[in-house]
Image 1: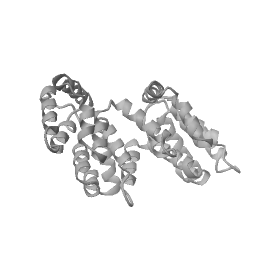
Image 2 (image 1 turned 90 degrees about the vertical axis):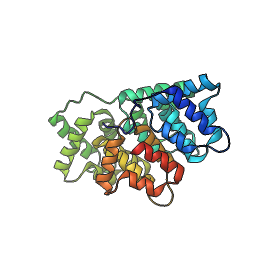
Image 3 (image 1 turned 60 degrees about the vertical axis):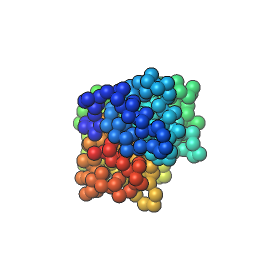
Image 4 (image 1 turned 120 degrees about the vertical axis):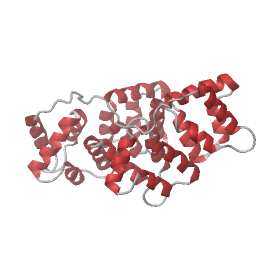
Length: 313
């Protein structure tokens, strides 16, 4: 995995704190200076700057930034300043507790994280909101989608990485029997296989399904499910096959059509910048014959564009 943001080599937290202070003193705000500091530092370095800022000036950097900034630019800056785990947890809570459930965000966060990460997210969710992530999902979702999301939220997938061809053939047959070969769909079979098997084994199961049936597991899901449940299962399969491709597609969709889904754009670019954003960039260019940098350049307004591009390049 290749990030785009790395720890700054000649890091001086006191110098950075001074630059940020000067950028917000007096009339107006030097947003370029804020971008140059915060987009070029790792999350750990940003939080060190936050601590040093308070020590040097007796002011809370986050509150000062909130007072100086606004709109989507403020959202990006505040996302950069948050501890990565807390950012994911807060995005989950926003998706669950807002007016109507943001199923896409809920699914995205649960399908891109590994077992240990999901377990940490669940623990932190409980700490911050005094309810379990599972209970929050149960209170906001229903039916097949609820069961799928609860299964994903346990972080209980086999992570051995072991593959077994005979077992893959049997599971491919079980998926066919539970779906396309029968009247109605046994969702529990799809749930147990797609949420429990390790990812290498699932890729083999997908290959065996296509060999046996003559079309992809995605086609089967498209035939057997509908609405948000279908979209969630397809997201899960895509993320299992190739996580950077899944996230590149999410970024593309966020900028397609009328208006931009800035929250998705910010969440993915900020949260993946120190993990695999370089891989996502490569997947984006391969799929859409245009660089992510070019697409964001043509889509976003000035200040948010500048900081997102600084994270991408």
